[in-house]
Amino acid sequence: MAKLNPKYIITLSKFWALFIGIGALLGSAMMFIDPSGNIWGMTQMLPDLQKLPFPDIFFQNFIFPGIALLLANGVTNITAFILICKKHRLAPLSVIVCGVILMLWITIQFVIFEFNFMSTLYFVFGILQAITGYEYWKCRKT
Image (cartoon, rainbow, N blue to C red; front, top):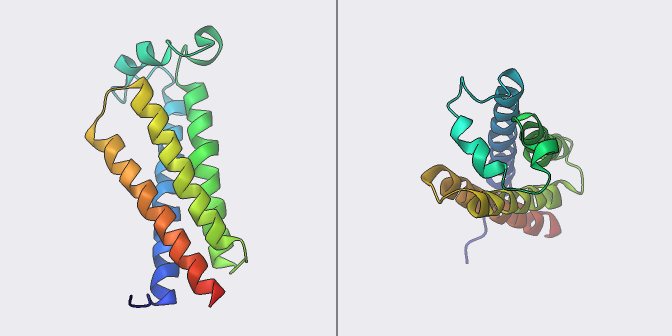
């Protein structure tokens, strides 16, 4: 098997961390700006969220899902990006973990909502991010 260029792997790791991290930051900002979901056309998702435990506490609007998105995919990916830039020894592991978190996030979406193109695409992004992190880890070991 051909060995991948470590610079390419690091660049790809940075890309995934920024792409997913910034997307999560923007997505959560949307939910904070309009917790009702009216502006973004998300109100039809609330009834599905309200089938989850503690709907009266967490799912009357999109504030809690916005916080969850921010913490689960925004903060983690931005942290991974910083670790990559600092060449921290945990950077490859952080990329793998972020990919796995994204796949888990999307799996939960598959349980709550119907399958859709965007969620499926982001699940694939999670797989690609985790694979990139693994390749990064392999590059660091050699």
